Image (tube, rainbow, N blue to C red):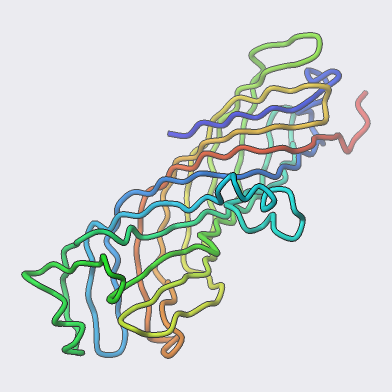
Length: 267
């Protein structure tokens, strides 16, 4: 399930905020939660799956607040930005980039299925399980990041109208592609530190929009969806051969600020 809270400032939101031709731009930040997944690694001399791998996100600490406001650093945290164009009254199409970060939990032991020809690393498997705690076998994260380029369609419905603010409920669906920059250290191999098209995502979204004075926007959003990555680049030495595949569910909480304006004269 998905929850979207948006605050947008309007002089007369009922007439203008989400009318046909309006545009809303947004910049914000996110927290993410990821379902466990089976990660399949394959390449020269190995082919195996790690089962039920858990992971977490990596938000920038509030103590590093300059990362949130310094123009040279604002892309470092888990950020979201999008633009919405209203094709009809209260119906908007959104193009956005969700810069999530996915970090495999290091302190875990998981089931192992498959083979490794290198005896040093094959020897780390005991009774069909492998301990990932020391990071010697694998470190795996999409931290620059798990980039979800998505297109969404939302319907907005006004649920409260006051003199200086209005509240809208919205709901919709989204879909897009994943372009991560994966940081993986697999069996001592150098990481493939390049952006690459790795898969696709789907999401559902719903929320509340509070609109003040028709222009300034503060937004909080929750999405729930599915990500499938059939082509993750894992190493630098065998870019075309060494790959990983995984799929998992995700939940994302987004909050931030934006601006709304109208591109057409209203009759």
